[in-house]
Length: 168
Image (cartoon, rainbow, N blue to C red; front, top):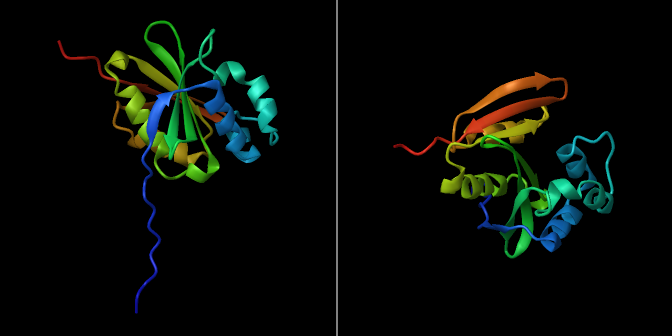
């Protein structure tokens, strides 16, 4: 007999600087549940309200984060933002559209963006809900730098990943 196997291929992800149009399309393609989990909200939000209320966390420029979109087949599949702070520290955040979750989009975006030599010596913080096993697994398995839990509070854990500085 032939056994039926489910094969999941990782899509080819092109990581490019984010635009307002790409971020809007991505947020609108996410389920309210995904948006609630990403923004630590108590209720499922309307995507268009998220675009207004969280624009400063999503859109690059004018005090907003550095941001990249992961494209799969030309469609926005994920968003990686870096809120740059003082002293080579930044907050990293990810959002992946529902239909692309579990396919390696976030992993590819983290690798492509954070392997850029300009981030050597930087420490990236990520705040994760303890029940978000996928995000915690991504942080533990990434190979950019060692991940460490630096703070735990009810409902969120803060991780730090430091990209090694270049050897002198």
